[in-house]
Length: 362
Image (tube, rainbow, N blue to C red):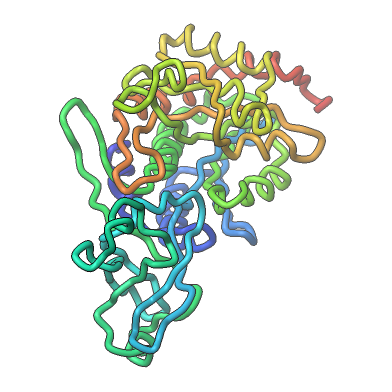
């Protein structure tokens, strides 16, 4: 089911704060396997299996980077701004879809053609303020009749497909790939409920990660787990243009376990927790990579700072071309991410020792 989940989730639309499509799919799937499922006020989906004292939380974010309608001119051309870490050079000449109250409207991102550009213009990337969306309308009134309004979310249309060697390519694999792992994990865990002694496992799909880790802050406060793991993605350095010493993570070598990210301004994971995860991975013979990332962070950062502090780290799927419409992963890495998370649950006693959990006292 892992690949099927991934193909479906990538095709759904869900710009930060407008995760409706992804949320409904995730909620329905969690409801098939969990003891309890709820949706909080911000839109996070929370599933739980087990009712033990020791609480483990796995969180994957549903939102994707994208755009939002900002202005419609008198001739029906739409100006927009970006939501999240969009690399503007990836936008030109892309097909897009706008989600409106009347349904989806397709369009294209246009700009001045090179034939009528000045020589110096051709040598530079087209700036965001010169890009626009053309939905085929002839006036602002036609755009409004289509149901398009200021504030409507926009995503790039990008088909998900498979390449040789188990490579999957598509949009929003950051972090719909993590959501696919989450759903496959809950499906497997549901078959071993009798083994979940003294623990409760929470499976959370968060919102608005790409714009400030907002959903994770709310849901971590609500659940207050004893330990938490963000299931996310991380950049690789195994392609032209990147030095191995700068980004040593590779496709096909297993998920990464984050030790530090954001140069320490993001997450600095507890040493005892990292050692426990390493011990579990090696005991279960699951390949893994350790990650020290200079840029970016995950939901694990904000979770770790919630309430009195929650031991947390990220378990990430290596991903080429992050924040582009052609993100690429190796399905074996996603499968090994599921296996590592599953092993963390079955070896929960090692986590209890790592976070100094004592039944009845935590």
